[in-house]
Image (cartoon, rainbow, N blue to C red; front, side, top):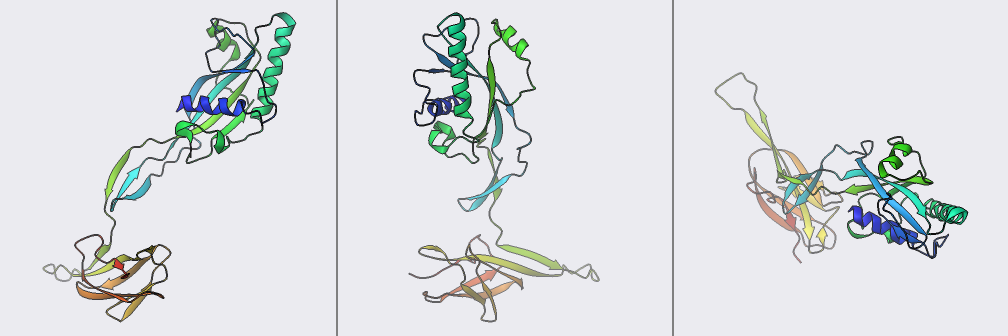
Length: 278
């Protein structure tokens, strides 16, 4: 994914339609140490740090319905990626300094146009992200000392700016949670007679569908006495039923009424679902 981030930045910086065009500037992602040499004027973006963004951390797991059962997965990890951006020239003396500062200024202007990376530039695993790829340009980075940084690389300090991007990393770890609940039991017991277990009442739920998908606003009755309307996802709910057999009837404009015999409590997860005939 970090290589995809490099490729994303390269595509943005090399786009001639975004001013300034930066024609003739080589884009590099190498470590700018004492072995770093260039054959032409170069902008180098060195990824020196990666850390979790705890402010954006989401502790709430995500529940998804997959194949008739729910799975729980960890939300995407939000990661800050820190670059130090420098410019390099093959010229010498004052000419080198002028060229390097020109390239650095152009990169600063170009990147500062975007608070987030436009989707058209995203590459590889970054395509279609769950969150926009945020970008902070030339903001302070209190986590490092520039003097120590350049000393560790064995080169003299250079003009630079800090670039930080926040990406989302899908962890792809899921845990089965079980099937959807379609029957809920409530047991009523006055505890006056310890030999009795009390009476159970049930709440049941299902979904009304047709060939095109779920049907919102359908009327569902139970034994012709009680009725409910389906919500935007085609779901309906009845409560206060005792164990036994019932007949559900679904009606909706443009559909032939559909009857379905059910038993409470149900033995399978879709026992109360109703599908209109074609």
